[in-house]
Every structure is written in C-alpha cells, then in structure tokens.
Image 1: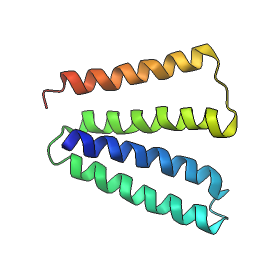
Image 2: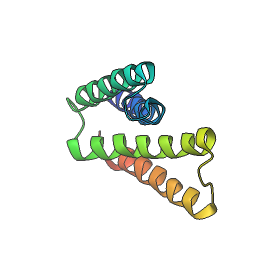
Image 3: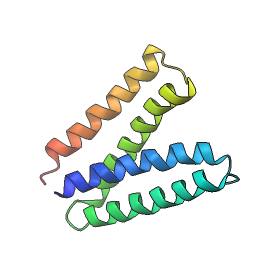
Image 4: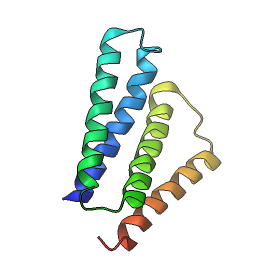
Length: 106
C-alpha cells in the first residue's frame, strides 16, 4: 500500500506542476487554488509513504514520477519537444524508478 500511496503522490506532483503552468505565476485564481491543493496532497501523501519507505528511495521515486509525468503532459498539452533523445532519457528515469521499486527491499 505504501508504494501505491507514493505513486499517487507522484501523480499529484505532476498535477501541481502542470497547474503551476496554468496559474501564470499564481495570477489566475482557479489554477492557483488547484496548484496549491495538489501540492498539499502530494506532499502529504509523500509523508504518509515515508512512514514505511526509506526517504532516499521514496523521494527519488516521487520526483521521478513527477518529472516524467510533467514532461509527458508538457508534450501533450504544450507541444514541447518529443525528440528521441528527450524521450529516451525519460525512459531511463522510468527504468530507475522501477529499479528502486524492485531492489528497495520494501
């Protein structure tokens, strides 16, 4: 259950990063509220997962999920670059996340 909670925390991290883009520097009220709410949920769920997971592993996975999720949504929503090398390095982050999950001992 702790890994699932961490995964959801990573999804909320992706959500707040995208929300921040839409908030236009916190000048738009609804995207700003969304961003602050998803930030809070993300950090809270990360803290719950840290009750049982090692902090280094959990933090690396949390930021990895957020990084890859945000990059993918940047491609989809904002037309950001999808060149091969960029996608390749996102793939490497995913491999790293899976490696941490498989070999973490939890």
